[in-house]
Amino acid sequence: MSEEPTLVVTAPDWFTGARRNRYVAEELLKKAKSEIVILGYEVSDVNVIRILGERSAMGVAVQVFVDRSQASIHDLYRHWPPNAGEAVIWEGVELSKRGTLSSLHAKALLVDQVIALVGSANLTRSGLDNNIEVGLIVTGQVVRELRQFIERLIERGLVKERERLTGSRNR
Image 1 (cartoon, rainbow, N blue to C red):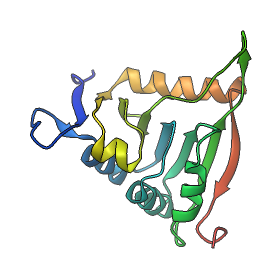
Image 2 (cartoon, rainbow, N blue to C red):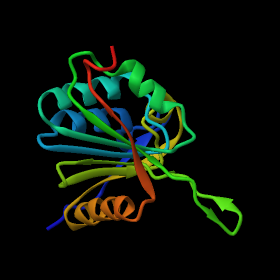
Image 3 (cartoon, rainbow, N blue to C red):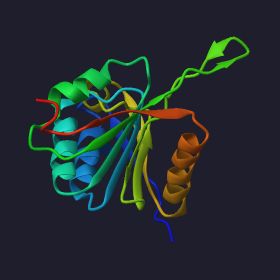
């Protein structure tokens, strides 16, 4: 049984009608016990990267999927903690369909295959603190379906493994 989705926002301070993206993202990451999967056009927030590193050091499997055109891969390298465990970094592949290129533009944070934050915010300082963004916290079957969707992206070659980050290797 799923709970009702919960609204999450990045919004001006005067808006008090929902939980904040930054707090929800950090809370979910800190609660992860077995797996964190992030789909993000860009993932560069230093605090998010620090928490990912902490969780990986505790044995949580971390996978981050980013768009191939974004510099956030360099931010992940630069800010990955020296005592962190491993994170697998995936990137979208360049596809041509009728002359257009596709990008990995999805934004979702899945934790332990039981809860997810899905919305418009990138895991960047702007996306979590400054922009106007909306998202939903979801649980239940839809989270498992989202995880299966990610597995299909891998199986069909729409994403490829770029690197495996480790704290010791990146220093």
